[in-house]
Every structure is written in structure tokens, then in C-alpha cells.
Length: 284
Ligand code: FAD
Image 1: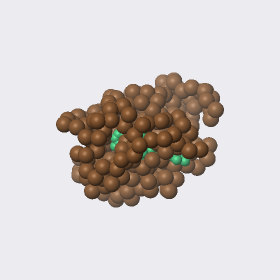
Image 2: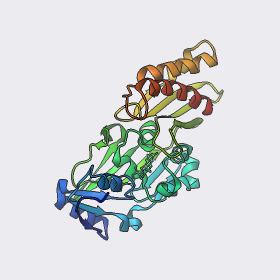
Image 3: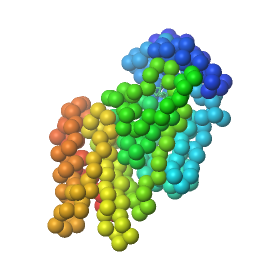
Image 4: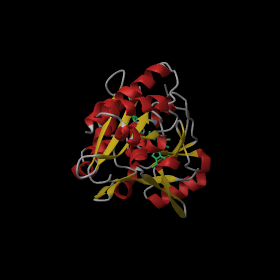
């Protein structure tokens, strides 16, 4: 299928892009890797009047900056660049654990981490990761800038709190506390598909190995990423095995999936429990 007609601009600087987006208001749409937007155009599920292509802004928006405090991912950093960044993955292994499950390598070569956050698909891995680590995005518009916490960014399926004229310039993934281990597991119908259900977990221990914190973020079981605190379930059970099952039962009881053509709500709920148990073991 072919997209509906649209005007197209490729500004040469972020300042020019912001001025154009401000002038266009709700008629303007940012084009990054195009791996979500172009299919939507071709299926005529979106019909923006004007695409603002930011792919020429690599010098300003392409960086992946890593410090001990976390990883800052520029709006034009591709999934594959973050996945291949040893410093980024060293600070936050969860990034690679999640990114290797996003689509296929050819899509990760083009799609951007920030584009995935802006797209806000409830089946996408990276919004759940951003929520689990308590990250944020840096949002710019002509003449102003704001930081939006992950918990406030996602408003519904494919819906964020971004306003017309705004551009996410980077995403901030803070490092997790010392002695935190992570895992990302999901079930897909075919390799590379969106997850029927997915879970990211982070487990923190004290120097003696006792669990002091455990959190999980779920994919494809709610309209926006669902974050659960599993600490109580994991520290109060009778024996280690029971505790993992207590956490899995809590997860299955807490998610609110819908039936759709891919899976029933009951199957997704079952997966939320099973994947929680497996991910907690994988992170141990
Ligand atoms: P685009 O498609 O260019 O844009 C997506 C949306 O974000 C648009 O609304 C755009 O206006 C907005 N946007 C982009 N950048 C910005 C910005 N800086 N500021 C404000 N708004 C912005 N994704 C997954 O998470 N998991 C999967 O398993 C998965 N499987 C896929 C399988 C296939 C076959 C395909 C084609 C895609 C799949 N994707 C999957 C989507 C892929 O990860 C996309 O790359 C990603 O979701 C969007 O990134 P993009 O750079 O391509 O954004």
C-alpha cells in the first residue's frame, strides 16, 4: 500500500527542526528510523500533513553517552548502536537483554531507541525498560525544554504526554543500584515478533546476598508499561522456591490484559506469572 500524500522537510539543525515543528503544530510529525511510522502511513492508519525528517541531525542527536550514573541515548541513536555499545551495556546490561528481543537486526539498524519510546506501543520492550529503571526523556520545543519522567510519559496505547511541536532529544536510563541483577524474558509467536507477554526484572541484594529489592515491568499486558514491586513476595515466603512462586502469583493477579487476535487475556495472564518466575531465576 502507498501512504497518503504528505509534505516533507529535512532540517539541517535541531534549532531549525524545532522552529518547523512549532510552525506546523499538530500537522507536523517527526520521522526518525521510520520502522513504526512508515508502516502506519502505508496502512493509512496515520495521515500527518507534514513529516519532519530528523535523520540529518546525527551529529547533534546521534550520541550514546555513558557514565557510571547511567546511559544517555540521543534521539538518533539506533537500537543496534546501543546494543553494540560495550560501555552502555556494561553500566546497564538490561539494555542489551531487551534490545536483542526487539524485532530483527535489520530493523534495529534503522529504528531508534527514542522512536520506540515516542511510539509508546504497549508491546514494545524499551518503554518497559525505561519505566523499570526510573528513567526520563529530555523534551525540547522552540524556546523551551523539559524533563519528563518515564512514569508520566506513557499515557495510553501509542499515546504519550508529548505536545505538538515537541521533540524528544534524548532518553536517560539511570544505572541500577550496586549488586542489582537483571533479566528480560518474553514469549513471541515467531522470532522477532512483538511479545505476547514480556517481563523485565531487577533484583537487588545486600552484601550477604539477601534480596533487598525486586521490581518487574511488563509488556503487552496493560495499556502502558506496568511496574510491580515484588520485594515483599520475595522476602516473606517460607522457602526460596515458594517465594518465586509467590511473586509469580502476584504478577499474574496484577496484570490486566485483553483478548486479541494473538492471544487470550487468560494466556497472557498465565505468561505473566510463568515469565516472572523464570526471569527472577535468570536474574539470580
Ligand atoms: P519512527 O517510526 O520514525 O517513529 C515512530 C513514532 O515516534 C512516530 O510517531 C514519530 O513521530 C515518533 N518519534 C520518533 N522520534 C521522535 C522524537 N525524537 N521525538 C518525538 N517523536 C518522535 N519494536 C519493538 O519495540 N519490539 C518489537 O518486537 C518490534 N518488532 C518490529 C517488527 C517489525 C517487522 C517492524 C517493522 C518494527 C518492529 N518494531 C518493534 C518497531 C521498531 O522497534 C521501531 O524502530 C521503533 O518502534 C520506532 O523507532 P523509529 O526510529 O523507527 O521511529
